[in-house]
Amino acid sequence: MHVANVLSVLDMPDRRALYLEGSAAEDADRAVVAPDGTVVVPAGTSQGFATYFGAFPASYWVRWTGTTVARLELSLEGAGTVRVSRSAPDGSSAVVATEPVAAELAIDVDVRDAADGGWLWFEVEATDEVRVRSGRWLVDVAPRREGRVSLAITTVNKPDFCHATLSAIAGSPALREVVDTVYVIDQGSDKVVDHPRHAEVARALGDQLTVIDQGNFGGSGGFSRGMLETLESGADAVMLMDDDVTVDPEALLRAVRFHRSAVDPVIVGGHMLDYYAPTVLHAFSEHVDQRHFMWGSVVREQERHDLATAPLRDTPWLHARADGDFNGWWMCLVPTTVLREVGLSLPFFIKWDDAEYCLRAGEAGFPTVSLPGAALWHVAWVDKDDTVEWQARLHTRNRVVTALLHARRPRGGTMLLDLLATDLKLLLGMRYYPVDLHVRALHEVLDGPLQLHQELERTVADARAIGTEYVETVRHGPGDEVFDAPDRAAGGQPVAPKPEGRARQAWFALRSISRTLRPVSAADRRRPSAVLQRSEAAWWEVPRHDSVLVLSGDGGSGTWLRRDVRTFWRLLVATSVAHLRLALRWRSTAARWRAAAPELASVEAWRRTFGR
Image (cartoon, rainbow, N blue to C red; front, side, top):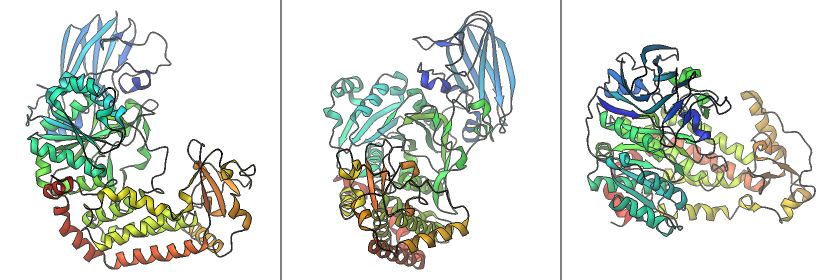
């Protein structure tokens, strides 16, 4: 038998629900975690481990590794009973084994019919106090790959986060045993090596740490550098990691063990838990919806699932094996076999690089598995809307390019109509800057792929330079006349209800467009006539105003949106023409991009970009 998961319990109240069943609000007789990681179950109580990190996702191991038997091994002290339960794909469960507490306990469970779904977990019922000193789940398949794994962290100005991650890695002998090199690709101005803790961390990791200082080539440039270094080092795989994360080393090890055991090479993705809401799971699996060619959860209603309020036992859909198209590169293990076959990332800077890569790999026969129990905590995207900032250009360009390369429906299904509708909403909402970026993005797509590598380092500066042409990009804060105007909350109108149905939305659009035909009053040009919280500034509310201040998430600053009739019509014509041109030239444009993609993702092209 070979180790798959090792029981790891972090003694952190805000994360307890991920490791142990039961809430912190329960009485004092619940289990406690000792400093050495031992779980102490008081006499007369029971403690379950049917949790995200405590349970074993048997169906994934059966489907991808050929596991037929899973074994639970526990080291215990005390008197009581251990029960092992198994769930079905519909979430129902049953006890499959019951054993008295013993110093060393081993329980085998036949799982050969569990490929479609199901977890295993155990529960300790204590007659006298029971101490769970250690535990692990093993499988009856031998590792098929033995090579070591590189860790590649791409960072821009987050040295505190990086050093916390490096310290966690340095403090885990088990993880370091399977790691070849930890690459930190530093693309910022606040350097990792200048951090006060760097000397200490560097000593701890020794020659396992390599810090690479390079220009800001975006996420795709940082991760491609990690891929390239891994190929040249001879490591067996690279685990790509974001910088603004916290990690449990055991969770990283689970991805490595799964990779080593898989029958055929697979990309092993880790889930994202919310850094600020640690029990909230971003998505269980993600795909690219071919109808609209847009990324997202396979089932949208399952996004942002709180495992504290709706734990494993109470959430049926968590038990069915979920297959997706891609995994975000906050944590994603890519075998070097895949790198050699399909190349590195496309030079997208950021956005869609992870989805495009996994789609490309999938078409080459390398699926992506988002593995439960392999995860980290990532800072969520809650404080800003990057679809109306400089990144808007990349959202559109990279989505369209990915569709040209991988869409199975003509013109990416309804994608072009969706993009055009989005531009109309933005224009009606007085967001002119992102629409300008979208138009330029479509022109880039139509012009072809020749400049992608060359313009990587200019991406941010070029997009922000365009923003200087638009007053909506100016941030207003305390001390600013616009922000502090006594009547800035004037207007007094309640937020409008969202128009439902195509007919009402069409009527709303026509009525809002007609509003652009009338001039803006002098008063509205001088200061906002209303103020909206960020949550209120929906596409159906902002067009009701000619001048409105939209506050940031924390309310400490705001963006002043003002209707500009000439800019509205100029950009409406420009985006309509650009979308029409792309629709008419879709096939020829797709052929050009598909012909160029292998070179764009090649090791040689990235070496030239890195100056190597």
